Image 1: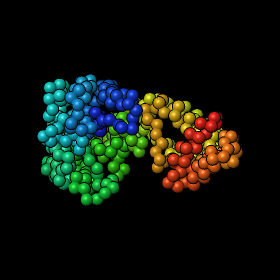
Image 2: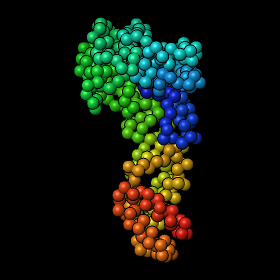
Image 3: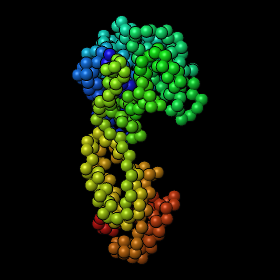
Image 4: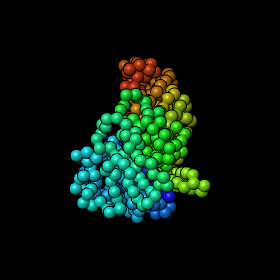
Amino acid sequence: MRFLHTADWHLGMSRRILSDEARPRFAEDRRTAVREIARIAQEEQVEFVVACGDVFDANHLDRAEVARAVEAMGAFTVPLFLLPGNHDPLDAGSVYRSRAFTAACPDHVRVIAEPGPIVLRPGVEIVGVPWRTRRPAGDQVAEVIAALPPAPGTTRVLAAHGIVDDDAIASGDDALIGHAALTCALDAGLVDYVALGDHHSTRQVGGDPRIRYPGTPEATRSDEQEAGGVLIVDIGHGDGGLAVRRLDVGTWSFRREAFDLRSAEDVERFAAALDSARDKERTVLRLDLAGSLSVAEDVRLHEVLDTRADLFASLTVSDRTYDVAVMAGDNDIAALGLAGYARTAADEIARVAAGGGDDAGAARDALRLLYRLAGGSA
């Protein structure tokens, strides 16, 4: 039996970090990813597709956004099972209960509304664990497993959403999924594969190939590992084992890169690195800059940033990750041709800019402005 495991589509997601021009493209590309998943499902001849939670980014979305999302789901030619997650729980105000969803939902799209087994055909079941509130009490997955009767000869896929307790950063979350319960259910033959959602990175849990997160099909953050794909799962493959393949889907890239800048040559290498980036219109790049530059080199650095910013979906350098000292020497200031009070002010600004204190950033900005006003050239 072959199926496609996906999760965390987050349809309707927006990112404030994106430019105004890039936001609509980001939303449309998430729907395009859904159509690409449908194409892969047909090409790979899977029996069904299960999307394990957070299909929608929120329950309260614009009606047109929901309608476009449902229209994209119409591209599937096999059953598509949608599991409500923590972003789109099946509560009273759920997007899955909205008129925009129910009126247009294709027949092959099924929302997993109740916990427990769903029979696809004799010998194949999905065991769903839907979120019906944003704050469930206790381990929902463990409760479903505890009530699950043995079914010899039946292949079962457990579809759930959430963080496994081994991966939890903070303790005390009642909704964590117990790793031990998953392993026991697998070892006892109650289920054959655990399809999870919530992590946006592709990963196995505890190194167990039977428990997996597929990652989000379109990247959303720079700390995600192997985002932008789906998993093709074969159960009963070969000698009766498990085979899992990851296939690429996404087109967006969220990256964080660091550069150490200490010369004019470093600045030009930095400019070349930005210029060589592929698919800039679908790249979100966060920069960590450090080093020390002269005034002219610093002005050139900001010319590079200013002229490249519009080419990327987002190109940012935050104050927290900008640590480039401006070392204005006598030659830098002398080249401006200033005298009297202006020269005294320039020397004082240069001293503050090099000091690295609370006012260093404002002083660097002032130096750049002074350099330009005085006719300096990078």
